[in-house]
Length: 249
Ligand code: AMP
Image (cartoon, protein in one colour):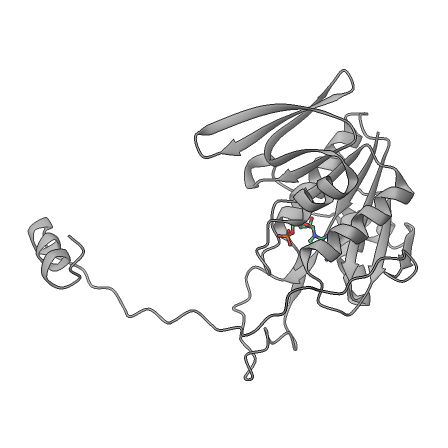
C-alpha cells in the first residue's frame, strides 16, 4: 500500500505571532517555522504502517515556498521514503491546496492519503475533506486509531458524543487527531540519511492546476488582550462577583 502524506510548513507552535502593522497578515520575518503538529502525527502514522509491513512506500508532499524543503527533509528523517514539493510563493486557500494534492495523487496513485485534521496557522480544517471530495475517496476524519483489515481501513473517529468507528474502502483520506499517536524525534543518523533521499520539485503550472482564490483576507487582527484575573477568598465572594460585577448569573 502506497501512502501519501501532506505536510504543511507553519509558524512553530511555540512562537507568539505578531500581526503586521498594516493588518494584511502575520509578520513572518525571522520567525521560526516548523512542520504543522497534526502533519507530524500523519507522518508518524504512515511510518508505523510501513514498519508493520502494511505500507510499501511513504511519499510526503508539501505545497509552499522553496523553504518547505526543510519540513519535507524532516519528514524524510522521520522515515518517509520520498518527497514532492509543489513550489509556490502564493498564499493558497484550502481548495487550491486540495486541488494540487489531488493532482499529485493522480500521479502517485496512493491507496491511503493522510493529512492533519487542521493546520495551526489557518485553522481551516478543510483540506482533507475537500481532497476526498475532489478525488472521490472515502474519508475518515479526526482519526484517533487506524488499522487495516482485509483490504479495508478501520478508522476510529473522535466525535462529540464519544468514539465512532468507520470502515473505509481504499483509496481513502484520513485526517489525524491529536491522540492518534505520539510522533518520534528524528535521530541524527536519520537526519543525515534524509539528505540523500529523493526530493522532487514541481509547480502548480506543471500540474495544470489553477490556484486562483475566490476569497480574500480583508484584515488580520490580534485578539483583544485580557485584563488580569483576581483570586477570591470564598465561594460566596465568587457568586457575589459573578452576580453583581460580571453580571453573568
Ligand atoms: P487545513 O485544512 O488548512 O486546516 O489543513 C489540514 C491539513 O491539510 C494539514 O494538516 C496538511 O496535512 C494539509 N495541508 C494544508 N495545507 C497544506 C500545504 N500547503 N501543503 C501540504 N499540506 C497541506
